[in-house]
Length: 172
Ligand SMILES: Nc1nc2c([nH]c(=O)n2[C@H]2C[C@H](O)[C@@H](COP(=O)(O)OP(=O)(O)OP(=O)(O)O)O2)c(=O)[nH]1
Image 1 (cartoon, rainbow, N blue to C red):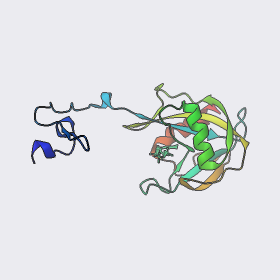
Image 2 (tube, rainbow, N blue to C red):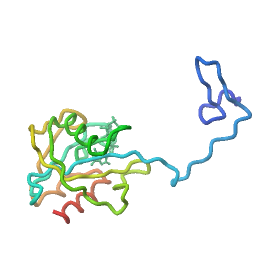
Image 3 (cartoon, rainbow, N blue to C red):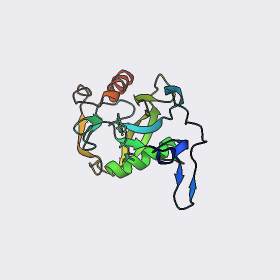
Image 4 (cartoon, helix red, strand yellow):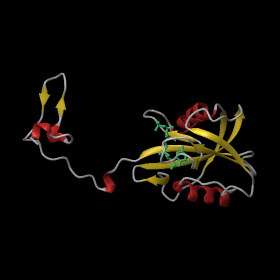
């Protein structure tokens, strides 16, 4: 393969429409180690019946992608550029469940950046309670379930959620 046809990296960059091609003389892209990886922020809510004395926790079963379908998670999603984490969480809960919530305290993680989910994903979690609407699985989920006081660990949580759920149990 010629340098001009390289599929990725600065050396193969082709700017379609501008007739610009940067090739051959460009240095290779640096290899990003884990410490250089940008982590995308996921925000999620531990929606409970009572912020002062939580008994029931709302769990959501993912319907997509296939690799995650059938596993349970806390409702939420990725923060978009320009949104604060809290704004992103309110938007995600409105879009995914059709509800408005009052946010409580954040569940502290060992890493201030949040709970690690994957090399490129980190999650911050807030306690929340419903203030408007009945939660419905409008996007990304095919079932919602209120877990009773003794049942917070009773569903097949995504792997990254297990430490989060245990921390919620310890903190409630
Ligand atoms: N919302 C949420 N996502 C979680 C949890 N645990 C966990 O591993 N994840 C993963 C699943 C996904 O890979 C990622 C969240 O992405 P998402 O698909 O919910 O985000 P999104 O609604 O913004 O959707 P998109 O823009 O990617 O289409 O984080 C969790 O408890 N809640």
